[in-house]
Image (cartoon, rainbow, N blue to C red; front, top):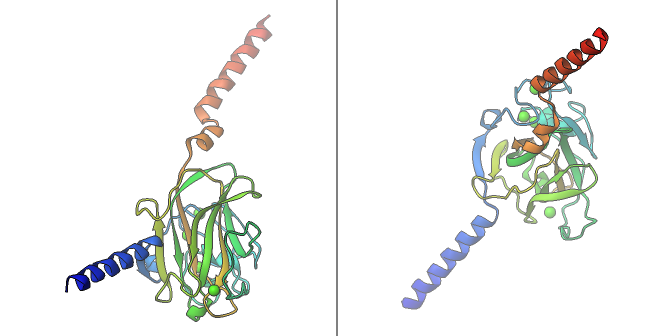
Length: 244
Ligand SMILES: [Ca+2]
Ligand SMILES: [Ca+2]
Ligand SMILES: [Ca+2]
Ligand SMILES: [Ca+2]
């Protein structure tokens, strides 16, 4: 009897521990469950099928563009829908890859904020409408400041198992919920998928990044008041010289 209780406690502890490894928060399903106003479009006024009113430069190694034939930038269009509300359907294969291999490659899409760096506070990933077998089961969120060297911020490595249990489901990962730590500010944030669950096509409905601007990058942009004082000083100096 005693053994049974101890065994049950042990199993419970194990289950609890494994559920914490890839902790995340389900926000709901559908466009209305997106957090919205993310770094790529704080005004939430980006065009559905064109690169208009977005506050980042986008890049991808797969179908770069909004609209198109379910192009990759559709993960930033603030919409969860079939067709051009999602990115689909190039293949990364279903076999598990070794993510410790420095040369591992996948399908990626990224947002570039130029000279502005952010500490990533949270991100959301949303499933698309197609079969769940197309969901990624190995993926990363990476940060970079030069577009060459990328550092992993979050790694999901569960071959055969995606993070979603419904279509159009919005799942959030955050520093506040201890899902990851944010020790370095970056100007580029990338999502890269390395494998899918069971279908030779990869899909993603939406991707949102939330962060805090680093003080350093904020200081790189001269304040208007500083510029005004500098201009005034130049004018005064010029006027003095002219008087001579
Ligand atoms: Ca905008
Ligand atoms: Ca957005
Ligand atoms: Ca979308
Ligand atoms: Ca897989």
